[in-house]
Image 1: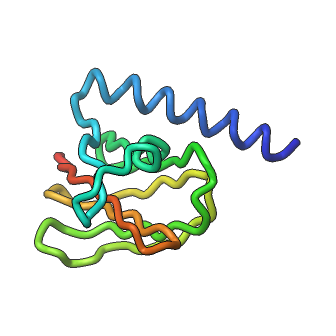
Image 2: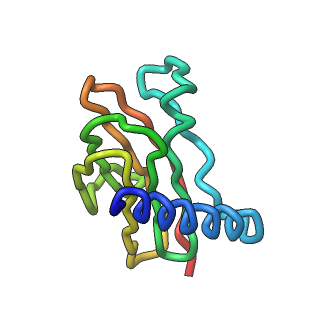
Length: 119
């Protein structure tokens, strides 16, 4: 029962964030394997959205334990966390600038997205 409630809450947050991203055009748009391979079935299960300074990440299927790394565009890591999927996470980014979020799956595949935080 707890899982069902958690999933419903996550879907609500995702839908609100997704609707807001259409209005603000701050949608996180690029998700691809760093190796250059198209793996759309995995990429389509990773959702990320930036709304102001809040980065929201959610996974729609079980991908195992995924590492989430948030770094500046120059490569300086500002936050790193491992989460068990399917789940979600929200992180507040204090400073405006260009950032990259990287998702590393248990098999070593990496997916990333570039985004901007503005004041």
